[in-house]
Length: 356
Image (cartoon, rainbow, N blue to C red; front, side):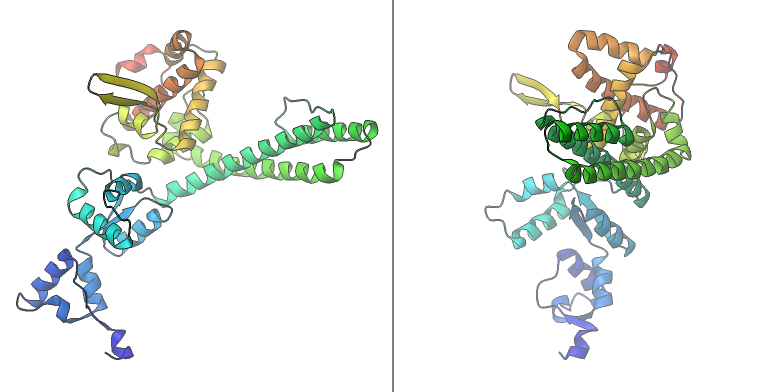
């Protein structure tokens, strides 16, 4: 076959996948072997659209799944951890064995593996803003902690208690000047650029937070979430973007398990062990829910039936365990508000029609 002809037709030398071969046999006739017939790319791709495509979860899986679905392919995204456990049955790990194993899973194993829901581009944009804001806040705090450690080496101490970078900068420069006078060591050329970096982190995080505030204010679901004391813009958007479609959960308890807030269970014979939470869901959303639970339990002054339940639990099992259990309950309440289209009610009457 010439180079010009190879651009429009493909002579298949290897055996075709069974699903593709079946489609081509119907089109070409039972007396014709599809593997012996030159196929143009359009016919081959059109035949492959009738096959199922399996994509394990990964960094590129949302993009690949979206683009393949736009081309008309039937794509299923499966949990990479579960796929890996199935493929580990093979003695040798090779690309050929992996491809055959994934094809076998696609053909007969999708019923017992978890198919992953691929979120929309809007949710990915929200998640990206939340992640960037979280990283900026962490980097600012880590940089400030590093500056505190540098000052402490020379006997200085920067007073805590302020989230403003201007106040922190003023206190840090005062300590740097004091160290320069008493220890004859000038740290300002090395520390001042770090203070500038902290200020830029603070400004950029504030800009992202303002964008998220506008987005949450325009979303009716997030506005209902923020009616709950302790739930702010970040937690509301984090929970909304982690779930996106409430209809994909059959039971309210499934949401807490999806976010990794339910205990692990190990059972073998007469042995039954309950350990800590699974932490299998999205870590950022789980952190936001635990933070909101902490705020409601520790800082909310008004009487709320949900808080009263959490305070009683705290006295029995301790605050640290209670706040995680409270976060699990809070996730169930938020999901119920979303699913039922209701508003948060602080008194006990609310629990008459919301199952948690």
